[in-house]
Length: 293
Image (tube, rainbow, N blue to C red; front, side):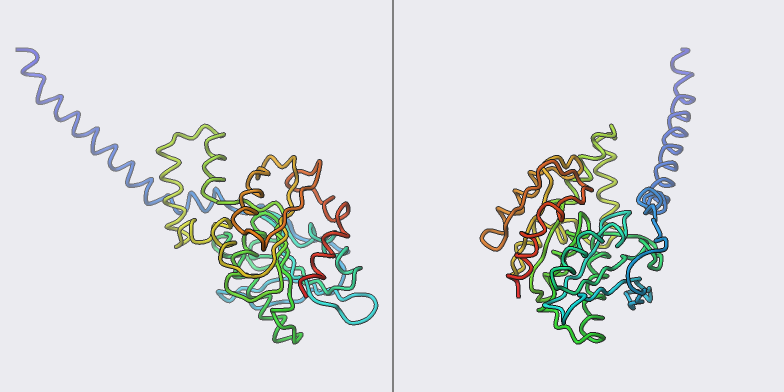
């Protein structure tokens, strides 16, 4: 009799618990975009004094301005132009060694800060597709303000900037791409990162699905392992053998997919943010750029 009398109360309690869980789930689902945007917020590093050249303002997408520096060779006209894009939570300052070695070799260099980075305007979010849009805006500026044909531009990017360079090269006919520390697939990288943090698999799947909804694109649409198949220009893949952020296996995978159009340059002892690549291999990298023209 006690069990029978308790049954209505148990059902009511169960119903209240279910409604509470449903309400909590719906609230978290509604708040997810704001939570994820906050989680992926860029730790902006603004420039201090001492950068070479004057700041150039390039009109970007969504009415945002991009800060850039255009460096010309000390002697003579540039043999070509290299458009340089940094990685996540970085800025063009971190690419000065790369630009400087190519500049000294006789090439012009346009260093660009992506939205939400360096001195460029802020935006609601940053992503690999947004980086690619900023590269395209810089190519447009070169063409209309310096008379440089995009076919005479080599794109150089680091990490997310490297993936963005490959994505931009799919839409623009450029002379070549140098992809430094480039991931093969953003979904796989995010999965591995969240797994290391101990995030449960169901939540990982939800986060990945939600991020794609926020971006308005599937990861497959801009994954470097896919975009590198669709470009016809030569690609130099530069990767450190001690990179623990993006494993060297990603570079080998990109090289296999690209086939004869790509060459892999492994930098011994270099990690993900190591800048020694351009000091140790400046001659090889310069030779690649020269071969693109």
